[in-house]
Amino acid sequence: MPTYELSVILRQMTRPEIVSTLKRTAETILNNGGIIRKLENLGTRELPHKMSEHGMVHRHGSYFLVQFDSATHLIEDFNEEFGRDVDIVRSSIFKTQNPEFIRCTLHEELLPPAYRKEVIEMMKLAQRKAKPKYRQQSGLDYYPFQK
Image 1 (cartoon, rainbow, N blue to C red):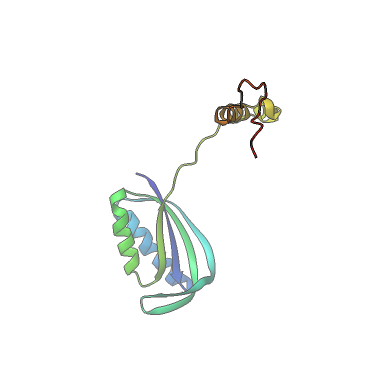
Image 2 (image 1 turned 60 degrees about the vertical axis):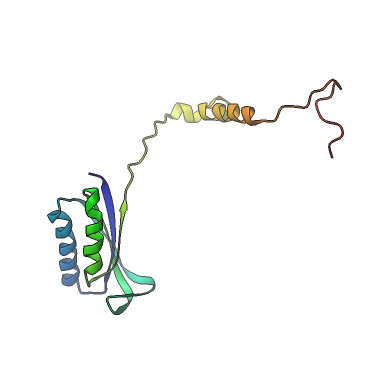
């Protein structure tokens, strides 16, 4: 199952109401076979612009981030379910990508640029793409009539 990230903006509510809304959101994920990895509170702040949702205008919201694993075909159901929830102003689900593992040693980093493997590869690539010098029987390495 791939890992997804759910960003949720809840309307301005009291703490017990926020807890019950987050419980409903988490239960929706868990009841459909998902696994919640992390729940992060990003705080309550003013929205970047006023948002109109479910017949109400919102200017402040509580931001939350939920990382979870779920089957791919259930994401549309989650979007529909969260879109119907009156307490959720906005919700977006993004697929997270695993970070690429890069092996690096201090010895390689301390080498002068001319001896680093990446720089040598870039120089070879530049030499392949470079234009050949002008050589005709004039003995010059440039074209003398070029403007």
